[in-house]
Image (tube, rainbow, N blue to C red):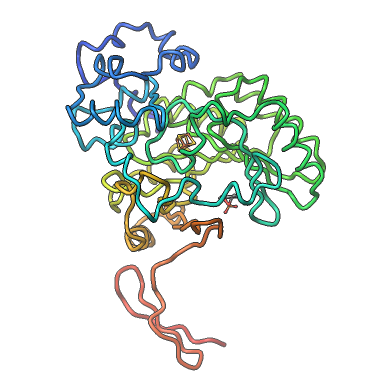
Length: 379
Ligand SMILES: *Cc1c(COP(=O)(O)O)cnc(C)c1O
Ligand code: SF4
């Protein structure tokens, strides 16, 4: 019997035949604690697995103290021996990270400005973003929260988390809590269980979202025990961050299956990145794979003007054209919203291609995805 799972392949253990990871026993390779411990953090560690160019070595030394480098062996295994490899571009520093562009900000979304208490961003009436940790298995070079992610001094301590919980408890308008970071799945099951229990005990909290990239960078983290723990706190919405079809491995498929079987609703927030996924064919392939993994494409996010990320950013038009190339051409389920998050803290706006050609006294002329024109007349 052929299953959908068989259409996904396990991640290779590196682009070279002689990589040290080839000899690692499966039990170790599949242990998330091992993956977390063995993360590649130095040039030497990388060079055992990936061939670095002179430019990459230089960028590594120059950038890594500004924004840490860390890549799980699993994710590093997906790095191809190609300077344009989308996994490579997301995980290895580029010299352009050091550029100070006048239009870029440390805190592009004004998150610190909208903080009633440290760690809580309360921008919209009924939901908050809860910054719970500064750790992630892989530090994505395009991260919007570079200013604090990976920096030990931003680690929320017990007291800060307590203040955040108190704030949510005291504000009955909050019905949706986005547990974010960093990546909250870097916590142990016990700590997360405790945090989720506290949130679930608040009568006005209706849904909890977990923002995590572990499904992409460390899918081994989603153990059966973890999924069982989560099941007790439903409804849980997991929001993840796949950016390229290469990230849709069998390991990721299994992690999503465990979460979905535990009742979590999984959605994806892709960040539009130049040279990585600014192409409709790539996005269509990604979204179709995600649907097979029971992940619903939710947002395509225009890259925020975070300092040192200009080399990743695309014109707004690119995102609109990607939506045009999806709508009608593939399942509506594969069509996310394209959003721009207003720099300075204005929140998200969704953009759609122009389908309405003209409107005249209740007579509307549209153009469909095939370029055909049709009319709809108001009652
Ligand atoms: C993106 C975001 C949310 C969630 O927005 P949705 O459109 O509801 O997914 C909430 N708070 C902040 C601060 C955000 O940036
Ligand atoms: S996982 Fe998210 S928070 Fe962590 S480095 Fe990547 S983009 Fe930033």
